[in-house]
Length: 423
Image 1 (tube, one colour):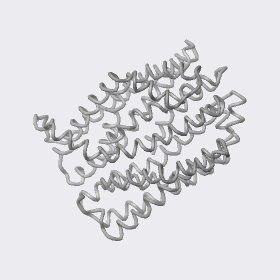
Image 2 (cartoon, rainbow, N blue to C red; image 1 turned 90 degrees about the vertical axis):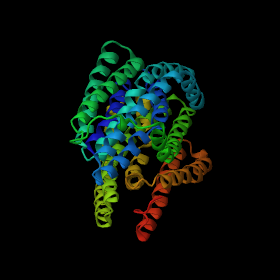
Image 3 (cartoon, rainbow, N blue to C red; image 1 turned 30 degrees about the vertical axis):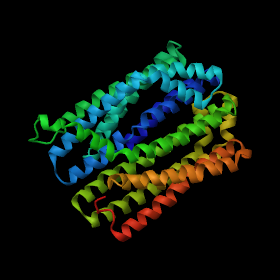
């Protein structure tokens, strides 16, 4: 949980630094640019989620060769995909900005931001793999150290580049790139200390082409699921942008808090991934039930604490992130939606952890597609007359649909002991 809470600090610091400049365009540009990179990078989020489930099961089976081979092959895939993203970044960024359709001033700043951020692609994807492997092998302290150091670098460089040197959104992008490479270097150093005893670096660990294709096949469902979720968030940003730069900036502030919620509650889901995966690897149904019950209990407590925090301190937190009066007042209007988010979203995060640990990724894909296409889009269309309130209601509906569909499958699989069957 502490590890995940450091992740949105990157966005919080960026928002706070830019939110106190004299124009909402800088904040809007980073909101658009950051959302674009969320889609671009988290399209390959299986490098984190898939690695966790597979590493946890190898850990449960006490198979050192499988643990190290998975790490090496996933890292090589991460570097290869990252280099391809850099190679083809211009058309990808142009297409993303065209779809989001921000104002010309915001689009120009967002393009500049994206042109710098893209150079962090290999580092970001390597981080996904390192974090996933460390969580799967039950060493969550490692990712916490990685991300705390990365955030420290980002905070210092944000202040230097934006406040001191006046580089605005360009400075935020450069600070983030440097922080990402710093986190990757720390992560590699930590992983080297965690290598299983007696397992030497051999040619067999690197595997054949078929081994890499197998990793991609296993994770294709996570990829589709993640793309669907990110397209929903991109659609959300784009619809906010169509209502003006002020609404776009206000939504950016509130979405930053959604990142805090998701990363805080995902801490329990990450623990469930590792422990559920270990239970499946060992074939222990008793252990599976105990882990699920504990993760559920802690997730609900976490959602309650977050709800109380946003109800009591929401206005103060918004003011902390932006000093622009029109943005702050607009964000206050939509604050009640933020109060609903923890309990609406906690179920999806928890069940993600269970399904990833059990490597039941096809079900994750199908429930997300149902929630996005069958619930989110129709609800948005029916509530377009509500303006930005309709947009937020659609997002809440998506989360409740994921909770209902994944909860039903989880109940069915537990009742029929399907979790331990081979797909």
